[in-house]
Image (cartoon, rainbow, N blue to C red; front, side):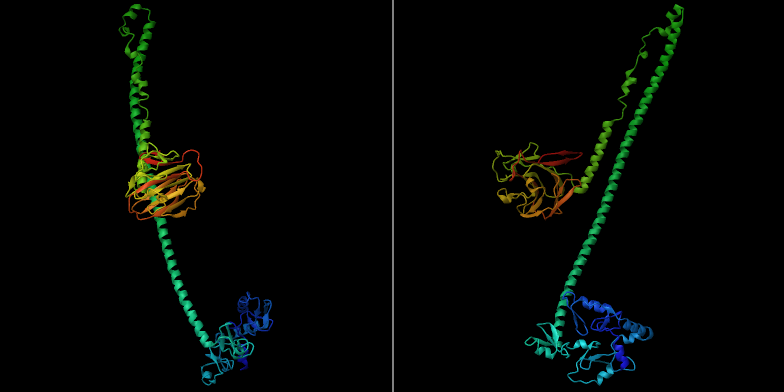
Length: 543
């Protein structure tokens, strides 16, 4: 019995295992260093520290002193006992000869019982049995040293019968078993909610992982697409280079052959002239006048062959030069074909030909003769008031789009307020809700001098400010009718995506422009310009 009691003194009352690095509090109780550190950490917020064994309180966090003697004893037992694992658990108090695991502990007797001793143990009501526990003192009231039987719901404390009559009189009390069942039920409910929430988190994680996977696939696919596109462009450029170099070589070869023929002819004439010159020199040196006068080769000194032949010399200099204009034309046509090819890939079709419909232009808007420029003016235009004409500062294109992919560019100057976008032909032509973006039949990009380089987009009166600072006055509008996408880009360097509307288009779409003097006084007219790209070359137009 004495050896077993001594063995019990080697167990930490917190972890119920042999001491590991035992330390001592000022009250004299010993604990594992890690265990007591964790216990004191839980009391940091309250600022009052207590011993978990005797409840002695310390105003400051106690300094932990290493118990060298106890540490040596534990090390000695660990090194000499071949069955140390058998004494690390809770053993029966009454099994002296050899340690036997306990299955219950009696709070009244403060003893742990194996199966055999439990059979002969008293069944009296004062003998409260619990799961095996070495720190049975913790199951008793620290004040009255009585078994904790009740739970005070108001103070959330376990108390003994004497506490219920003193500090907890009048409080709502419950038996420990009942209070424990309620708390377990609450914990089960909380656990179920946590499980549900965890499942939601798992679903969100799976969803995000799927989105990440799809995004990675899109990135990989886009990289492959761009690589293939540049490979194709390089191939087309290489083919164009080969064609032009072959044409230059062909012209050079033709020119060389032609010039070689001319040179050969001139060399023959040169030799003939040299021979005639030598003969004349010989005659000039003769003293016999009869021989000079009767020489047959000098009968006509003005022989046409003696003179220069322009058609054989200088006349060929320009005729046989490389055809620079032709080469330039081939380059222009080749590059234009490549640009058209790229436009077809990116947009499905080339740039849209936008012409403004004068019949829809408000009477404070001037439309240029080429139908590319819309200018705000104070002078009211004398156009007839019709149902299709806008009342206020707005105009739409004559062309409408019912399918395909299209794009066009706009350039804005000096406008206090401008709007660019698209609308259905059924848009209202009167009132504030006729402005593009202020209804469910139009989509627009807003900006102006009054917004200090900020823009926003709007549809059905729902406004969204864009986070970007606008640095350019040129924008691109891209339409993919079947996909239901209307996108806006700022044509800065590099080009920047501003926003994309997604919708199911149910009517034809017209390009729409709005210009207003606004609340800022402007010197001169406000106008917009649409840059229209035709095949093989680029032109800039006002809108």
